[in-house]
Length: 438
Image (cartoon, rainbow, N blue to C red; front, side):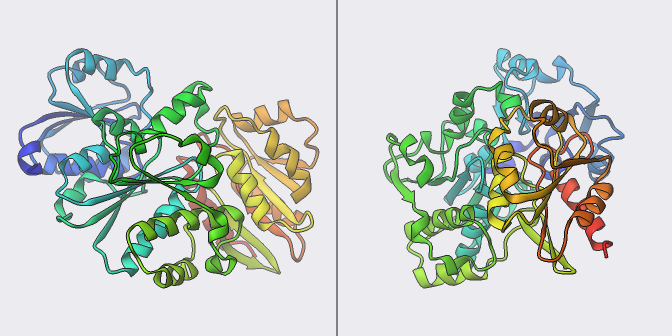
C-alpha cells in the first residue's frame, strides 16, 4: 500500500503524545504527510513542553491537553492509540461506537510496509536485550535491518520513509503494542516470547489471563510458514498455533559466549537470539562472535563504575521484583550487595524478592513511593533497610554501607512515577550522580 496516499488528507486523533520521543515522532510523520491531526494527552502543555517544541512548525496540528474530549473521537478516519491507554477507555469506546478504526504505530507500520521480514519480540523480562542481540546478529550478517517498537526515542511510523522490500524489521513489542496486532489480526513472521511473569497488574487488574491474551497476539495469527521461539521456562504454554515452534534452551549457550553479561537470564536471551539466527540460516560462528562482543544495554544490569573496588550497577529498567531478583542473583557473592530499590506500586507480589534479599544483601536503601510504603507495611521483617528522600541521598547511604569487594546495585523493582518522569529519567539521574561520586 502507498503510505503517502494512505495518510494524505486523513483526519487523525493521536491519543497520547508522551515524553519518550515515540509519540512526537509519529506526530511529526503524520503532520508531514498531510493529515489533519488532533493531539490529545492527559499531561498539560507545561509537562509536554519538550515534545511540543518539536511540533511547533506544523499548522495542521491542533491540541487537546490536560484531558481528552469525546468530540475528538468522532468524525475521524482513525485513532492512533499510544501504549498504556486503559482497556476501558471511554474515548476508545466512543471511537468504536462511531465505527472509527483504532490503530497503533507498530501494527500500522507492518500493515503499510512493503514485503519485508518482521521479527517481533515480547516477554515480561528479556525482550530488550533479546531484541538488541538479534539486531546485532542481523547487522553482522550483512542484512538491511531496522529496529523499532518499544524503543526510547524511536518512532515506528517514520521508518516507512526508509524501509525497502526485502529488508528486515526487528520490533520490541510490549503487551500494549500487541493490542494493535490483535485488532489487525496479524502476527510477525518470526515471533519470540522470552518469559511470562506478573507485571502491569495495576493495569490488568490482577488478571494474568488478560495480560497473556494481549501478549499472545505475537503468535496468534501466524501461518504454517511462520516461526515462534519461546523460552524453555514457558514452553508448556505453547502447545497450539499454526507456526513452527522452537524452544530456546539455556544449555545451548556456552557460558563464554556472553562474557560481558552476567546472570542466567542473559543466557536465556542469548538462546532466543541463537534460535532466530538459526531460523534465518545465519552461520553459527558469526552468531557466536556477535554474542561474545555484545556489551549489553544501558540501564539493564549495566556496570557503570568501580570506585575503591566497589562495583556500581545501573539496573533502572528492573521495574518488577523478578527483574531485581535476577539482578541480585547475577551479581551477589556472600551477601556483598547494597541494594537501592523502591518506587511506585504496580500491584505485584514482592514476597519472592523479600525472601531472598537477606541471602544477597548486607543493606537495602529504599526510595520513596507508593510501592515502598506498601513494602514496608507488608514486610516489617525486612530489617536491613534504611530510607532516603532523594536518589542522591540513597547513593550516599549505599556508599556508606559498602566496603571493598561489594556491589551497589540500583535495581528499583518498582515503577518510576512520582519521583521521576520515567525509568529512563531515573537511570540518567543515577548516572549523573554516580559520575560525581568519589
